[in-house]
Image 1: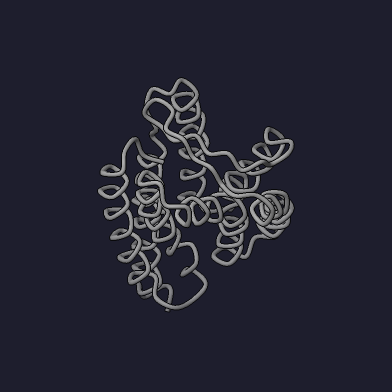
Image 2: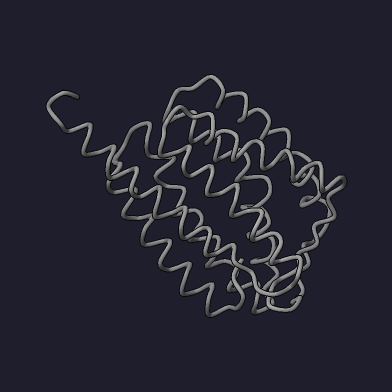
Length: 205
């Protein structure tokens, strides 16, 4: 989330561009889903620009990406990239976390209202605190247990950033999730670039 439609468009366009570059760097193969994560995050920001404009489809699309999709996609992408068994367990956890919001989205319309310099979404999900804990465990946990030092660094950045962004959002001061998405995207692009370089070096042939 960003603090305005203009900020969403600006940051979303930049993150999408980073995502395209990461995908081109990674190429086809097991690294592609993880390299494509910035592209998904960028599209997510662009969709939210429509939420600020009051478009119902944008609210639904934003919620689908944020809630059922990301807690499954992130650990599954880590699993694909690293082959770690722990990532498979985190993917299963993410799938379990995704079920209640998916059911809620199928049954109720998504609402979003400006709250200070943020947007306040209402999905109608029960036990939201428990689901949030599972969400963070699935996404951040998969990164921290990936066995890849760059992904562990990303997990630490996302874990600390989520706490800071959540606090600022609670205070309705300003939404900084888009900044966190931008940082994560740059880190993922750097990993895609270095992974490509390493795979082309003589010792990896």
